[in-house]
Image (tube, rainbow, N blue to C red; front, side, top):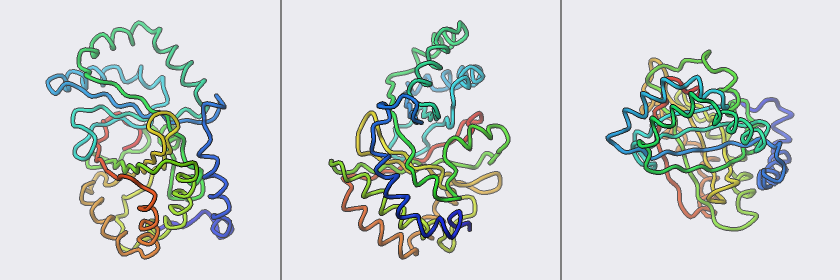
Length: 274
């Protein structure tokens, strides 16, 4: 298993994490050029999911005019079945999101696609997040932009899954920074836990900026071409329960949270994150 980027990075990790935790709490929309992540969820009518999926696959080249990082559907968990879940990473922030979505909306092909799927959708939801600064401190944590840049060059195979782990935290300006500080201190223990499945990977940590505030998501991927994602996830969970520092950290994190839930998503074939 890989460790922190260097011994020097390990020794300064707590200082970096504290600074970046505070930065993660700032409102990204106050600076239109700060990177953001958009989580979109489209609840589909069960009878129309196949139609939506078919039309979306046929128009995927259009959608990739946007910085798509992930697209998939839930198999189990807290997110309702027949929900299209997609993540976009805008490195240039809200201004980039506005400009690129406006440009796409003018395309006749996009208008035709929307006309074919509009009746499939029962509800649409969009939330804005920022990636926590600690993502840059750990070599194992790729961040979402990595998957966009390597789209098409990474094939995890048909057995991979993406796990979303959602923490709803208590109100307060200090809650998220305290969560991230505790999380960063405990994370090496989990990442390097003996018995962790080799395909398990922490992709990113997202902190809410617009939507339900004081929300944090962990995004994990498990499994691959020859490994079942669900089995890999369960093996890694069991391994983390034996990681002393992780268990201690989670016990403290639990005091900051009001709820915790998970969802398992199956990536679409065209999803960069597999």
